[in-house]
Length: 277
Image 1 (cartoon, helix red, strand yellow):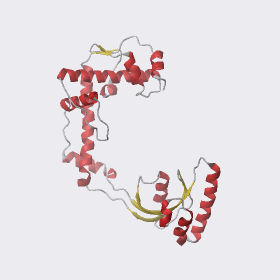
Image 2 (cartoon, helix red, strand yellow):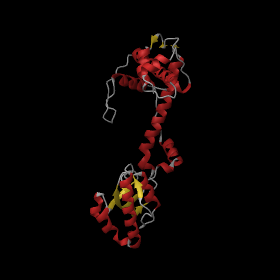
Image 3 (cartoon, one colour):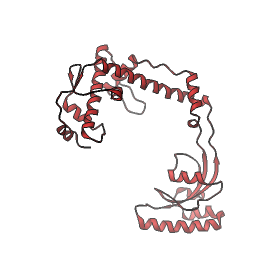
């Protein structure tokens, strides 16, 4: 993206952007542009201007109502700014968001059963031949060794643990290559796909390439995923539905404020009116 000053210089602005008579400075829009990705500079500038108009409109409402609020921790170690605290307090006071009832939660649960299933648990062992793909020569040597070990395993599969101790670059070598129990997300996508294709006790037909090098993988056991009961996911569903209701209600609230405001220099319609920056 072009730098903010270049964007500002390349876009003619025949009219000052303002909301209810309060001007949004060109400098403020230029600073905001960096947060709005777009294929064209004019689109980034317009998106930035709209975001600042909506923010100013909400802050005007805060001042009108005399709302005060102290910043809170957002739950992930980051504290709100004073402005974020005021906007949160405004939405809490002005936007009604009823909690979803059990009927709505159960309906969502039944319509989305695939989302509420435990992940399978695998027991696996591997032999890692550490190498970086960017280093073509050493990677090729690692592949030669891996193929040689794999050929031996196909003749003598019972030697897996001994070969892991002799060749694997993973700390699991000390355990004969055993990784214990693993679930989705604990290994690389390539490793997971290889595990999914294996039958119990089987070894991969070819070394598996990952960012760590090449792996010979054996599936030692698998516990299939199970459907989770509604009671176990009810709170998660309620939180999801509550967030959706809040998003829609906030969008409608902002749209009403926009429709009653005097906005000059930029058009705000449709989805743009629903954005709270």
